Image (cartoon, rainbow, N blue to C red; front, side):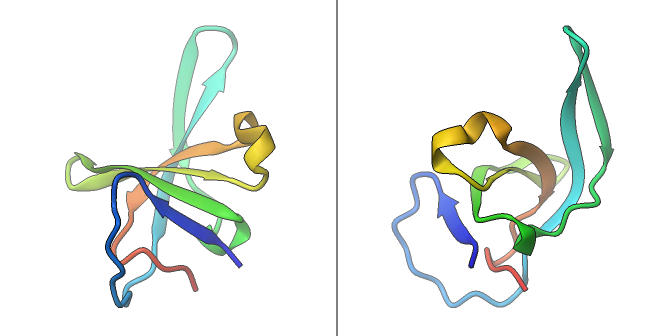
Length: 87
């Protein structure tokens, strides 16, 4: 099961529309950043954090990782948090 985290949010909502990953942000080499189409499915991650709602062009910044003790293995995604659920 995927644990969903909204920084600063204390509300419980009845979710309906699932999270969508559109692009992932990756580091290439030492100083380069690349954005590529996301092939990962949100349900494949144990934890997903909503970092910033409406980060750019009505898209959200999301951080996904499996092990809370190894967050450095996580991935940043551009996508849609929608109602904050996974299928």
